[in-house]
Image (cartoon, rainbow, N blue to C red; front, side, top):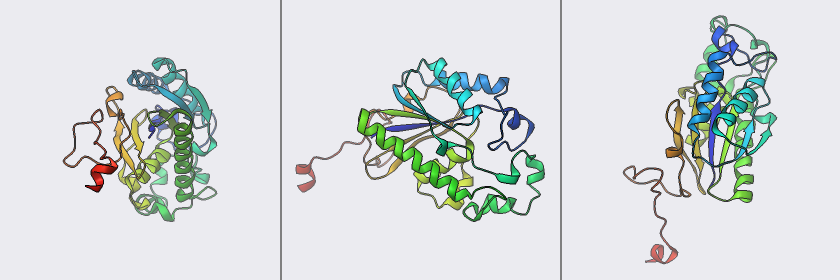
Amino acid sequence: MPTVLLLRHGRSTANAAGILAGRAAGVDLDAKGLEQADEAGRRLAGIDVVRVVCSPVVRCRQTAAAALAAAGITAEVVVDERLSECDYGEWTGRKLSDLAREGIWRTVQDAPSEVVFPGGETMLGMRDRVVAAVREHDDEVRARYGDHAVVLVVSHGDPIKAVASDALGQPFDRFQRIMVDPASLTVVHYGADRPFVCALNTLTGPVAPYVPTAPVTDAAVGGGAGADSPVPVPSAEEEAS
């Protein structure tokens, strides 16, 4: 089954200023963010990425370009609107320190399933569109390239948290327990019966060791020997015995 690498964009000018950028235009990566994107690309060494899927927002496009150049990845790049940042509506462009005083801030933290951003979208709506997009690309890549394929998805903090939360089988109201830092890489392997979260919010070191070398069907009781030693699948004869 294919494996999905989830890359958050590098630090933006808005991140550095403590501003919620959302989908606002004119928000680029800052110098540190470009360095982070380049480093993320180097971390992808040795991974055969067959498709790159990117949010249309500029900071994600910049991150994808820098990371792919550093990694030498020449796979097809698909821009998917469903991977865009959450539409924060009237919250867009405001300081996080001010938003923390808003009445719905605690709801965003404790019960995101109930949140509707003023003039924007629901957090559940964000989750549903992003998860659907990731799973759809995973299915398409499986059909075209086979079970060992790898997809790179470049998106934003909340969308990536939503995908990770879904893969973990969490109730959505617990998704704020997940951290996704700028230019971090998270690895999800979509097995036949359920997803497996192979790595979460990694910031340093090669990513290849987190990518299973064969489709994963069952969890290794006791933890197993790592991604390069998948759990053996019993044959039909063995299951019947």
